[in-house]
Image (cartoon, rainbow, N blue to C red; front, side, top):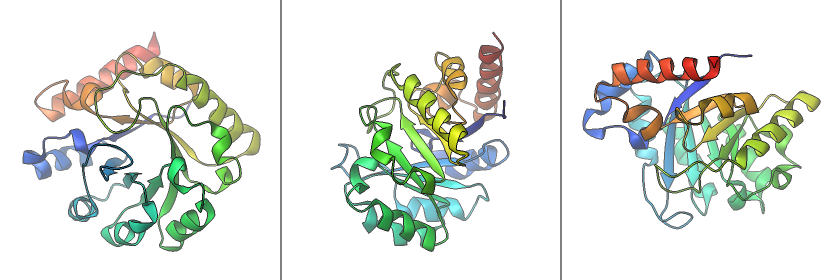
Length: 226
């Protein structure tokens, strides 16, 4: 089994300690997860291409942008210019022009991902699954942190793992939503490769982020060993 990758969700960080916390995470994380919400696709409004630009100045880690927006095409040029590594729209927003969107992301030198809401089947991305670099499975309904885990998504993770292995695809299988002590073992067993850690998984474990990170890794290792 490959080593699990961790991607802190920066909408859950303490923004009053932006540089201090990024400096800590630069030495520990595998990716940064940046949520951009437009208040329409989901009710919330969070981070922005400007945030990506500022983050890019102080990190060399891959910046993974999750576009919870109605019109993802409007953001791609600016995000590529700002330093995004992955640009990941929702399948629900691109199925009318998925090939054009994916090709545009790649033409700008970024990696293309796609995100599936809990009720969206894998079947929706069947015809372009081979083109994407990462598939993010939402294990909570999108838009707000701290929601309960939806256990039915374990079957979706297994399905994507099976498709990947049978076809020798290279996409990463990433999980967004309630990745924490209660779910680490089940997600790992199902085939998750990247865990997005937010409030419950990382930032609320301890006030000191160094201690919180060490605690998260300790919990993860303990859970998967049992």
